Image (tube, rainbow, N blue to C red):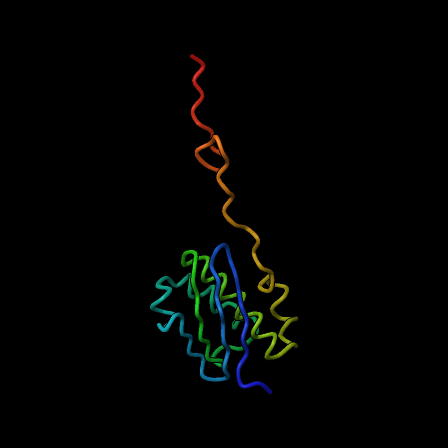
Length: 129
């Protein structure tokens, strides 16, 4: 058995490289405790959701390097990375995680700005006269 499990998660423009090591449940994001990095409880719950669904709370130490995007995109990327790494550690957990949609990469991203318009969909103001 491997001593650690590695996986990558992505969301919008955020990328998270996740490393799971059997341990006590300590989570580190970019060298900081995840409670400091993600200050709101809702963001922390999104990150812990995978462990709760798989009944794996406090069984792994998680080290994350994340870059790009904002905090919401980074949390989504970390959650996907943790889910992928958990399945590498124990393939039987797939049945517990998959129905909650945590193994699916969220394809939504910002739509590109079009030429002749101020944004993706917005038009410049029309003046009849």
